[in-house]
Image (cartoon, rainbow, N blue to C red):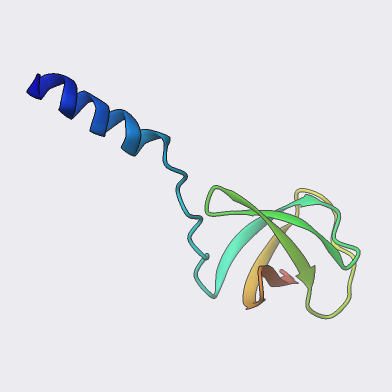
Length: 80
């Protein structure tokens, strides 16, 4: 009986959604969809909506630097 109780708790814990952790500032991210200036980036293993801080276009697969946040939006700058 104890075994089934522990198994149930283990399975319940595995099904709970993990909360995405905000990436560190500054840190790197890879552009997933072209930033024009909005798009998405991959940071810390999570896909995030992002905006290029200076309004520049950044092509897909470029590396950008995370410089801040606005609500659930990452603010990024293209690496030079």
